[in-house]
Length: 481
Image (cartoon, rainbow, N blue to C red; front, side, top):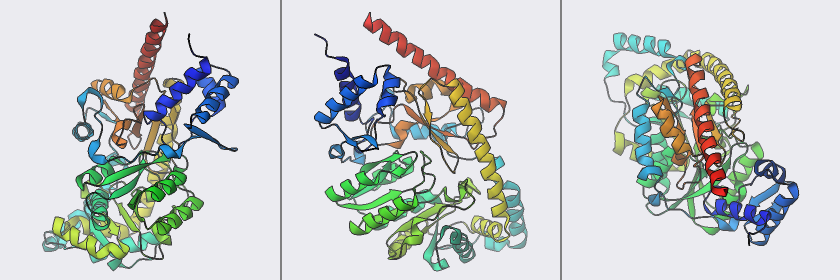
């Protein structure tokens, strides 16, 4: 005898929880939304949710909704990354992404690299040319760690906007933000230690953790509110977490920005549990608001936090100029930086320092932010019109990345493969987690030259999704016959 409809729905949701689609502590769709998605009555969904509560799978929070029980929090080891479709791996996927990002024939929705029109190329060209003519010896000399004093001074001035009061000696120049994150993790943890990360997470963090043989706990990150601090608090109570890597401003890939109250709570939790916060603020200056968000580091009165950023997303990706403010870990970070790279190119440091000094950077940022906002609106409108019903997008307030959630019936890896055949690149959600929980998500870069060709590429992605959705419906109908 078939089980009741409400029990089938409960079994389906419980399976999704066990598969990692809904993480511990994460909010599941509301009763009304589930009723609409599944085309069943509200009463049926309520019965299903009541059954799931009885099973201990979910719990209700008054006036907030239903959430997966936090007791199901998983302690994941990054060395055990699950294989993805076609016996592929995350490493192979990222290698293909890097290869595709160099292909001019491909529409680059995948890599988080802004197109040249959003970068101050002419100004940098003039600066580099002037330096090569007037100071050729300086340009070929070593600039040993911690890096150019003039650049560090300019960075300290810029970071006043984020609320940070710094001296040049507080700053170490790095080979981009990825290098800054790697150095920070090396300074605070050793092989086997546990690190808390956002989920979905920037894949560079996943790679750094694996390379350093660290363990990771994934904390759900909502595209509106950011990291779930209830889950973080629960995890910190259960395990000895050495550090937490977090992007409080315009998180990659969700675009989330933490509220001020969440920032205060996160800092308090980190102090109470002796967890070092490693702040990745690479998208901080690309906020669409009139004033950029305050950095967590600005409220670090005990010098316990580490701050990482770079100019790769706003000035010159290829210059690979980042920096780290290490607080009490600064000496260890500088040591690792010296051992690993010895020096940072003088020419690029000096060129960026000159660009910051003459005031052109702020004008460049104002223009770029407006262009990104226009592209975002156009991108979201096209997705709403051409993608299957149930497709959702994040609502970033800065940066240039959009997190797209497809209906559960669709597979982003299938979409990725089909799109690449049409010379369209994107990055599937599997690259942003240690598990397969984001199999129906993908990240989309909208820092592109938005023209008819770009429009057509996004419409084609929608058509491919519609085709995949129709095939799923047809298969389901045949299975019921």
